[in-house]
Structure formats: C-alpha cells, structure tokens
Length: 613
Image 1 (cartoon, rainbow, N blue to C red):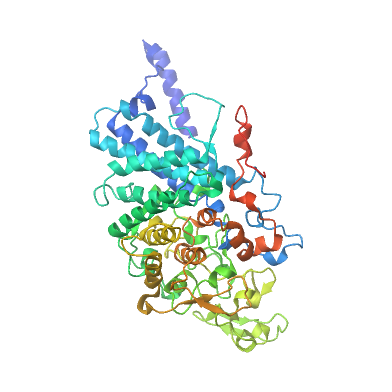
Image 2 (image 1 turned 90 degrees about the vertical axis):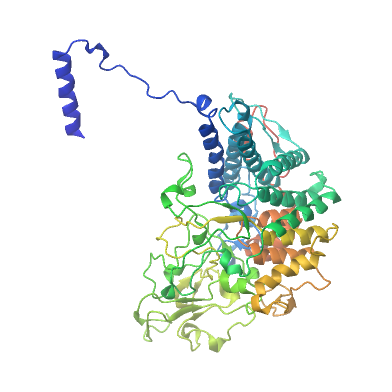
C-alpha cells in the first residue's frame, strides 16, 4: 500500500506541473443516483425489497431464548447448586432479575419490529412500482403481509398489548401507541386472509417463498390461539376453534406426512466413526414453510449490521446439551459430535426423556444420543480417581459413556468401574445427569446429546449448518385439529380429536403402529417407574396433547407459545424445569414478558409497562 501511495503522489505532481485544464482532475462524478425512492419503484427493486423480508427470519429464529428456555422441556445446567451461590439463568429461575432489561426480551423485540418495518415498507410502496406484472405484484404484497402477520403473532403472544405500525416509517418520531391485543389479532387475521387469497399453491412459486399453504397453516395456529382467549383479551370465540380445524384439514390434505420421522431432519449415523455423510434433503413434502439456508455457506449470513451470532448459517445442530469434547478418547475441538454451543445451551430437562417410550417411539432413538464412543485410543486411563493405580486402555470405537433409557436404569453393579461397578465405561442414569459434581469418568455436567438437528460433515463451529429450519409441518396441523376439537370444535375431515392425535403417535411408532407406547405417569418424579400409555383411547386431554407436541416438535421454536396458549406455562414449568422448581418464583406475571426498558425510554410519552415488572 505504501508503494501505491507514492506512485499516486508522483503521478499527481507530474499532472499538476505539465498539464493544462487540470482543474477538472479531481472532479467527482457520481456513477449512481440510486436511492430507495428510485429503486423500490422498479420491478427489480421491489423484488429485492420483498426478498429482504425473508432474511430476517434467520435472525428472529436464532433469538430463541424466550421460546425454549424457561419451559418444561429445556433448562440450564447445575440446578443442584440452587441456593448455594449459583443463581442460574434468569430465564429459568424467573426470579427478581427477570426485569425489562433482560437482553433476550430486547433482542427479540428489536428483531420483530425490524421485520415489521421492512414489511410495512413493501406494503406501503406497492402503488408506486412500475413495470411489474399486476399478478406478481399482488403475490409479493401477499408475501409481505404474511411475514408481517407472522412477526406480529410472535410479538402479541410475548407482550400482549403492543405498538402496531402498519405503514412505512419515513420520519423520526418518539410517539408510540400500544394497541389492545384483540385488535392485533384482528389485523393478523386480515393480513393472512388477504395473503391466502393471492398466494400461489406449493410448486407454483420459488421454493422457500410464502405460499397459500403457509398462510393457511398460520391461520390455523392463530385461530387456535385466539380461541383460547388468554385473559379474555384476544377477542376469541368458539368459532375460532372451528376455523382452526378447517385450516388444519387444508394443510393435511395438501402436505402428506413423511412416513419416517427421522427423514424430516439431517440424516446421520449414531456413531461418528460409522458416518457415511448421506445426501441431505430438507425439502420434504411434509414441510409447509421453513427458514431457508443454502448449501453455499457464503450466502447464509444475515444483515451486515446484525451481531455475528445471527450470521453464517443454521446453528441448531450445536445448541442442545452434551459436552462431547470432554469424553475419554475425544481429540477435544472436534466436529465429529460437533461443539456444544456456548452462546445458548439448551439442556433437555430430565422429565422430558420420560415422556417417550424408548423402545417403541422412533423419535426417542433419533432425538437422543444414547451412547458416546472414543474417537481415538487412550492408554493407561484412570477410571477411578480414588484408585489411580488401576488403569485401563480404551480403543477407538469403544463405548465411553452410556445413558440407559429412563425405564431401565442401571443397577450399581451395571455401572462403571469408577463407582464400584464392572463396566469399562461411564453409565449415567437419568437422575445423575446434568448436575454439577464430577460425574463418572471425570465428565462434568454431562447430559445426553439432544441431536435431533445434528448435521454431519460440518466444520467445528457453532453455526455453518445448511439444513433448512422447518417452522410449519403438517404433523403439527394434526395436533392443532386435535386440540381445537378437544376445545369444542366440530369433528374434522378425519374424524374426532383422537383420530388426529393417534395419527402422529402411530407415525412415530413405525412398524409398531397401533401398539400402546408407555411414558412415565409422573414425568417430574424421577424415582417413579409407573407408566401410562400415551395412545388416546377415550382419555385425551390437553396435557396429553402438550406431551405429544413435546415429543414431536421439541426444539422447533414453539414450546413457550404452546404453554402460554393453553395456560399451562406455570404448572408444567414449575414441576418439570429443575431450576424453576428449585427457586419457586414463577407466577402468572410471567405469561407476558416485560416491555424492554429501552423501548420505554425512547418513547414520549413513555408507553406503559406490563403488570408485575
């Protein structure tokens, strides 16, 4: 760079000395007068504007703390230390630290309103676009309305009464008005119905864009939620449940179930040493709408002004518990099991495993790593720290950690040598996982990997996944219909609530369809081995549906919304999330999140805070 600068200076001096008319030498000539005002009015500019609305979905769905943490399914480690100085994550403890300054609330709020702002721009500018086919324009506006409704649906569930701008923001203003939640629901449904009327059916548009099916699916979710009419604030009626069934039936008819559950997610071997790196297919016929990621990692980023954690690619493969880097025979920083992501670590609660039949339910087999293997030889390994003179050799491929199924825990004699057993590997029963003391084979805070989303062949990183993240699947439409019928809707095209519910159970049972899968009758009581069938047979209730949604949809960005909708958030989280149980501070206040303090501070007059914060 220094050489180039000197050459430039010499040339400039020569021109100054020997040229005439040099007054024009440094004249600046703009090569482009392109602005949003003259670009978005073109067909290409408007297309790019609408496309930009989709990239925000990546960032929104990477801000998932408020959706998965603090529920019955996911928690954080070291809950046995509650009361001994370890305060735990505020998102699980629900203690006095849960304030309007909690970062997760501010982050999600900002992302959703950024998305709303973009969609408002597209919707507001539609009348100025030139040179675009009228039908194409209507479809693109329909896409923007679908995405706006989606963002508002997340926001109104989290915060209740919220600001609801519906036009492009063109001037700076600190005046903000909260709109009652029932009016927000009215607008969401209006947007979705208008989108449904113009959006094409699947296969008749670019893959990944919103379709008529996506609008219908979201309408099913919205009507189901409004029908529950949380705190009598959503304007819901019994008719909402009937509409939820109607829309769910449309999805079921158009998007057939994948016969094998595991094919909905990245294919992988259970033993990294036996990995074949199969070709991945994330365009399954069951998937209605998904966050898109490309096989070209360079195109998987987000906005340049967003934090780095939102960039690079899909990171769901590295979020869910189990420190594979600490097991004997691990080379440390390895991508074979991939890293246990540091930013957001979601540990499956012990009660969650007990919702599955480990023998019959194929989802248990796919979702959890039941054994971990040495990736290299280890000589003279000391299995028992109290007997350093006793050593063993571990060969590549040997089992080093085994997690027995919850319904068949290991006896003392079937455990590892480190605790007086005979096994040459660690054996951790469910009541021994996820706690702070050093566990067998020197593994601290060990839990089974929940690797439902694990994608093999990725570099050692928290992101860089290329598999699409499914947001809407027709399997959920079956469960929406079952829930709505249970709440009083008329039977759907397939029959009563139990028909819809059992269809998803039977898909999960595979060759054992029709049998009675058994879960723990008291999931939160780890010492109880009592079981109950989770096939519906005249006994279907909302807890069975929530259990089935947990088995089918765990990690798929919907759990907090499920518990909020059904008003089971406090009951189930307070019994199944170990941190919440230990602190005992969760209350009805937590059915709504605090309005971010940053938002209150920047409004004049300040908008009101939600009760209890």
